Image 1 (cartoon, rainbow over the protein chains, first blue to last red):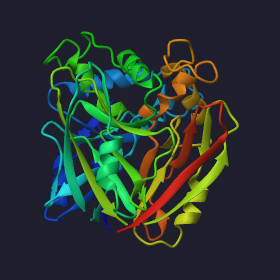
Image 2 (cartoon, rainbow over the protein chains, first blue to last red):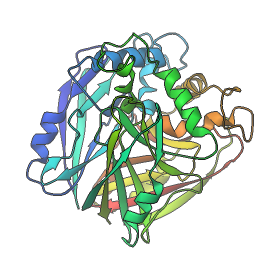
Image 3 (tube, rainbow over the protein chains, first blue to last red):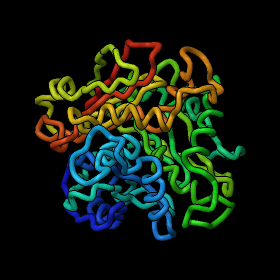
Length: 134
Length: 134
Length: 134
């Protein structure tokens, strides 16, 4: 298995960072297999979604509704409401696999691979990419 | 890696389509490995759940509650509330792996593999199956 | 593919059971690949989250809010509200893969692998671990 990590910085309160181009470049020419995308953080997830047509902002709205940043959470470290960040990976898991065919991600037309991160206290993020040849 | 796509039509507003039989047939006789189920659409997901005892309708209720089809969404193409469809894959991811043992899916007694699709504007769906031998 | 099942008992109404140590032991010395964690039950999921700082209780709060145990569910077997348990795997999927590097799970500092189970009617749970060498 070939594996690497990429680094990035999250600058928005609810960061939806498109990783598709970097993953596409890393996977280029690898033949057939699975590309595994993994986020080694406890307050982030990885998702497949359309970007560029407003859904990033809608995702922020959805997450703020489902995981309110208020005083209800027992986990109360960091910024107000940070306990909600720790629930994000239960809804948006930090692990995802994508088929690779002829060295290309077999994504649908409207799918992009995104990091989803609501943690305001840490902007430095890593994502691990692994390729399992089949 | 062996990989194929299956096609299907979604006829309900919230479609929960049981794929278990078709996947079971495709996987038959393949030995040991992982069966990867992938939906190349931005408004659908794949899940493991019990079918036939009412939970399909409950899933529709849950999704309509968590992702209301109203005017709050920035993404406003298509049918009213379609922006909600684009959030579905954040909650119900379009990627899932199932262990295969002796050519059979190692599912639990009450688990079926289902496509989950709330998109009313496109009934034609594809699902990619891949088998990674181990 | 090497594969095994581990057994455990869930004693809380919302059980968040840390599996990290048992998986770490099973994976030790296996080199490079993917560790697949699979729950063969229709009312449970598997997640990566921080444990020991209150987020387990917050996860219970979140699940009880998103999936209320009331009379709205068509699926009405078992304990009151049990229909909600059958929706859990749509939000917290029962399938997850973790990269393995030099025989160790490549988890982040604050990530633990947990079984999430809200089913009060069955305390006996199994989790299937599989290792796909890469």
